[in-house]
Amino acid sequence: MQDTMTKMRREVLEIPDAVERLLTRGLPDIEAAAEALRRKNPVFLATVARGSSDHVATFLKYSSELSTGVPVASIGPSIASIYGASLKLEQAGCISISQSGQSPDIVAMAAAATQQGALTLAITNDPQAPLGTASQRTIDIHAGPELSVAATKTFVNSAVAALLLLARWKDDRDLTAALHALPEQLARACEMHWPELRGALKGHSSVFTLGRGPSWAMSNEAALKFKETCQIHAESYSSAEVLHGPVSIVGSGFPVLGLSAGDAAEDALCEVADAIALKGAQVFVTSDKCQKAARLDHVRTDHPLTDPVALITSFYAMVERLATQRGINPDTPRHLKKVTETR
Image (cartoon, rainbow, N blue to C red; front, side, top):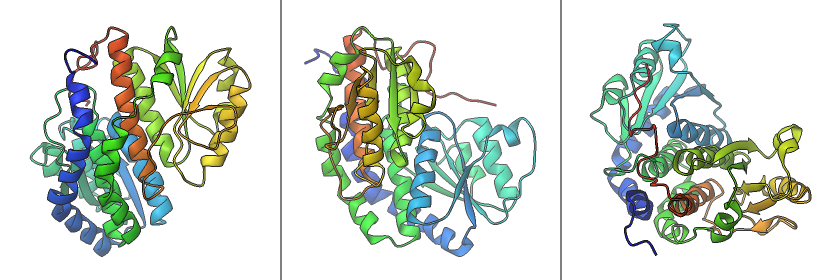
């Protein structure tokens, strides 16, 4: 047990309470945004985000396409801020995601989308920030102050807000019920910090992370956090892509983390994980279905779309401990600051 708890660990442990706060205090904003989507009836959704927030956008993409049938495209913020291009967004809902709500390029793209006829929604931890002004509707994620540079509870609350928006838009009662059951499940997920994976990473400076579908978004977030908090070079791949070329650098003992939800992609991900394990890699997967890869403890939730939220929560608990074991303070990663304002 650490003598001094890092801000990052404290904020990971706050995730269940932060999600509960969102599910209660954030519901009016989400209901209003869902009603606006029903009135607009968009042909497609577009997302605007960077960094961890863009991983939320990827999660939103898969979740929307699986649960609502509405396709989602990602818009590069520089389309507005650098290039000044105009897009045909009259039939779109445009969702901007930014924990700070301050990055000028995200704000510029949201404002442009509003001018170009989209229904614009903002998901942010600061509804008074410029992004809220640039958007027609704002969803406050109610994560509370986040002092560690590494985003954890703001990432989880952004993902939950996106899921709840989809659920309320389409009156998906199963998904809504699963979301309201999450806080207790996330409290258990916080206690799973994967010592066997941390042991396998000792002495390694590179790792692969794998996912498929919605869990691929969490794989992307995990790879970023390995770099950000532990100075480990991590690459994220869909399990459908990793055997097409990247696997050639895998040697004996090479560490691989597979984040598998209990969904239709679980068998396919495990098949790939087992194939990589047979090549000598140390492969760890959040599934009971792998034959060669090692099982990691995991929390299964009440819906396939909420499983990835529990997985990333356990990952955060693990990576904070890994950073401190490597003598790195995860609260203040080198060269980084809390808010990056990109133009």
